[in-house]
Image (cartoon, rainbow, N blue to C red):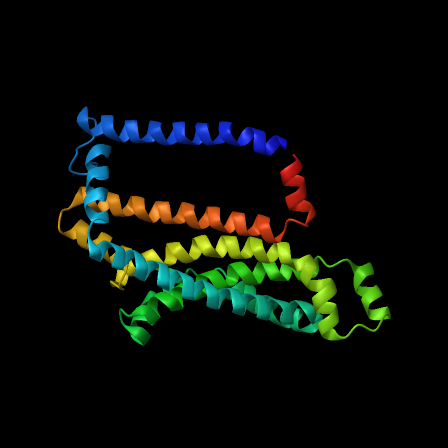
Length: 263
């Protein structure tokens, strides 16, 4: 058993203790009158609202809509980011030619494109996908570019000396080096995609958890609103844990993961 595995129960216990402390704080503050329960209901009421919502069909339909938009948008962003990143990164002239364009487009907040998305797709799934893909694409692309730039020059020269084809250099030299960066980009993009999916639903009313949160807020169902927000947090944690587990599985051969496991 590694040191990391031996310390895992203690880390999990500390994490659960912190969560229990947060729930206790949310329970005490409104009941003590420190904050109005009209704005922050006690944790027990929020959890009760969560239980009632979880027993309804529309709740799970909303969860499914959000996850569907997240999954499709993330898949498109990953495929596009990896493909474009390898093509641009493998051709120095192309990378120099597109560097300024990437640096110009990348900082544009996805929410600034909401008016465009509404014009193009209204409040349908297309609007959510447009914003999710735009936000997640840059996370993957930039990491792939870093990965391609990190290829060992000696390995690249060796592959060239042995007359590897373009596909061979990508398959045996570039891809193994870039893969850890790709997974980092996918992990970052997965969280960003969920944030954008919920934000789009919240702002323009596209089907999903965000739209249900907006309805709960406007109808004065504050405990339900907080319960739905908790659900989005749980989805984020689940996605991050799954992404980390996938990364460790597929990169078990890489020094970064082996070093983490033996630490």
